[in-house]
Structure formats: structure tokens, C-alpha cells
Amino acid sequence: MTQRRILLIVSGGIAAYKALELVRLLKGKNIAVRAVLTDSATRFVTPLSFGVLTEDHVYGDMFDLKEEREIGHIQLSREADLIVVAPATANILARMAGGLADDLATTVLLATDKPVLVAPAMNVRMWHHKATQRNIAQLRDDGIHVMEPGVGAMACNEWGKGRLPEPAEILAEIERLLADGAASPPLLTDTTRTIVAPDLSGPTLYGRHVLVTAGPTHEPIDPVRYIANRSSGKQGYAIAAAAARAGARVTLVSGPVALPTPPGVTRIDVETAREMLAAVEAALPADVAIMVAAVADWRAADEAPQKLKKDGSGRPAPLPLAENPDILATLGQSEQRPALVIGFAAETQNIVEHAKAKRMRKHADWIVANDVSGEVMGGATNSVHIVTANGVEDWPDMPKTAVAARLVQKIADELAGR
Ligand SMILES: Cc1cc2nc3c(=O)[nH]c(=O)nc-3n(C[C@H](O)[C@H](O)[C@H](O)COP(=O)(O)O)c2cc1C
Image (cartoon, rainbow, N blue to C red; front, side):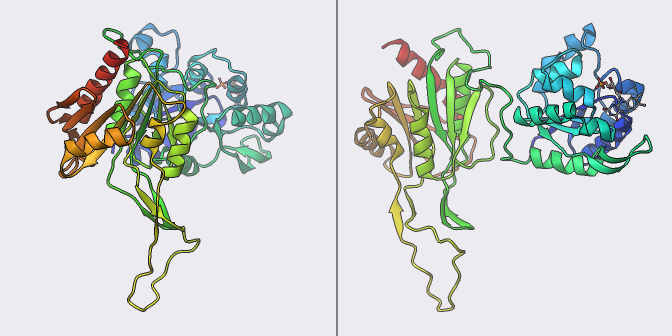
């Protein structure tokens, strides 16, 4: 698994020293940490301590020419999986809630679409002040994860709510948010626009909406079991990424997979075939649909509300199946049919013949047929045959990313020629 990366923003509170302990705990979990200190924070703790513990440069000055040239304030958030503000002063919370960007810390926080966790720490009256509570409510509404401060003795000899959560608690929250599949509300109002710089040198998909499905579906049998297949989602994700690079607005409807969302792609997570169909229909209209997901043909006719148990008779309980909706065929005949409908066919024998028949039966324009008798499912390469109305192209075995790039190029050429 790739190493996870935290951007830790330390603001100027008495608890700033505890952020050093947090860095130590994170490093112990093999999580990389890069630190940004506010000006006030440097009055409580030194950049030197954070530099030694993070084994990285410590950032603070927005207008430092060297820092900006080497990494840049946008890059700081781009290279992090999660931004953590700990301790978060009343002041930085107010600046965040107001959308200010008057130092490096708040500029990074405003320029990010990554999940943000804040761990407030302040005097009890500062915490209960209506202004702070208004800011906290605003931040939560904006999609920021806000931890509740602890209750106890304060540095100022007072007692109450406002203590920084213990570093171990902050670590646990960080691990929860970093876990695969943990959802964070979007911070930006418009997540549909492509934000990767498109390669505009050849035919492009600029201005086109490309709809991709990927991964397997899970069809529940009972609360703990499901019908699934070995699809990893790699090919579909590679196609979504390539389409975004070609300038398209991309909607990726994904079954359960352990893959990161490609940059510039809007991802909708689903579990079952029926959910996938609903998400696909909701995403229309689209110019191109590329149905890569390995959708389960059948589901359990009745999902058992309780876990199915052995009854001791030695005979397994019957498992009646029901046919799932055919997403590709539905799309091929939809009133909102995309101009180009492409299906994938995973076959283990008579690959091209099956693909030709499937193209006609499902009203698809192209079928990308792949032989899944080997290591294709979950593997890094794929050898495909492109079946169109004009014939069959046999592509050599190549990485799934190369299949994706070539397919997207073919789609762009096709649309440009129409
Ligand atoms: C000794 C001392 C301790 C402070 N502790 C806190 C604190 O725990 N929480 C807080 O919100 N502000 C605290 N402050 C006030 C902040 O340092 C002040 O609001 C500062 O402007 C915060 O800047 P920053 O948010 O950019 O880091 C403290 C100030 C002093 C002098």
C-alpha cells in the first residue's frame, strides 16, 4: 500500500507542543507528515523541532521565494491525503469559517479539495463563545471534520471544555479518515469540472461528458454474504483517468474496489447492479458511455434479513437467483442514448464471436472483448479486441493504462470524425 501523507497545520495555542507528540505517533504508523506553522505557532514551538521529527522542511512563510519555487502552496495540499489542523485556535477556526487566506496555513486550507480535520484547543470561554460556536457550525456545514475538544483543567487554571483532544485520539480519527472507503463531504461547490490540465495536442474530449462504470457489483445474500466476481476495477479506472486527461468531464460509477479516485473524475460509489443502473441513468445525458464494470448477471432472489445458518441436515439451503437488469442493453436503447455506447465483454472462449453477438444484442456501438481466462482480472495488462460495425481490431497485450489511452484516443478520433 502507498504511504499515506498528512499535512499538519499547527496554529498558535498553548497546546502546540502536543502536535509534536502527534507527529511522533503518525511516524510510528508509517504515515508521512509535513508541517505548516502559523506565525503565532512559532512563538510556542520551534520549526526546528517539527523539522527534526517530520524529517522534512517546515513551511510557514507564504512569500518565501525558495519555498514557493520548490513546492508551492497549491502543491502542499495536492501532495497530502488529509489536512489536519492541530491545535486549531479560535482565530484559525474563524479565519477558515470566513474563507480568509491571509497566511500560508489558511491559503492552503482554502485551496484544497482534500478532507480536512480540525482539533480545536482553547480557553473554555473562547470555546463556548457564540462566535466560535457559529464558526464551528459553519465549518461542519462546509464539510470540515471537527473533533470535540476535551473537558478538564486548562493551562489558565480554569476548568471546562476546550482542551486539545489527546494525540492518540487525534491519531485514531486520522486513521479512520484515511481508511479506504471513508467518505468526506466535498469542500468545493463544483466538483464536476475537470481540474487536470487536458492534453490538447490531438483530438480531445474537451467539453464532452464521459460516463464510465468500473469494478464488480456485490449482490447481497444475507447481511454478511454476497455474490461477487474478481474484477479489480483497474481497467475502468484507467479509462476514466485517461478520459479526464483528454479534457472530458468524467463520471465514474464504481462498484466496491480499493482504488483511489483519479484526478478530475467525479466518482459515485454503488454496490449492486440495480444501484449501478440507477446511478448510470441519473448521470445522463452523456456523450460517451463506457461500461467496463463486471456486473453480476444474477442476484439472490430474496436477501435474507438474518444470517443464513446451517440446519444440521447436511443439505445447504436453496439459493434462488433472479436476473439483474442489463445496464448496457438498457443504455443502448435509452431515449437518452449517448452518441457512443461501448461495452466490455469478458469471455473465456470464442471471444470475438461472442463479442459480435453481444454488440448486436445490446445495441452497443463498440464491444471491447477481453480474454479473462488468464490473469486479466486484477492483473496489470490486458489484450483486447475492438469489435465495431466496421470489423475487428486486435490489440496486442499491453498495460491497462495503455489500453485506456489508446481507447480514449480512438473515441476522440471517432467523435471528431462525426
Ligand atoms: C500564552 C498564550 C496562549 C494561548 N493559547 C491559545 C489557545 O490555546 N487557543 C487559542 O485559540 N488561542 C490561544 N492564544 C491566542 C492565539 O495565540 C492568538 O489568537 C493568535 O492570534 C492565534 O494565531 P493563529 O491562529 O494564526 O495561530 C494564546 C495566546 C497566548 C499569549
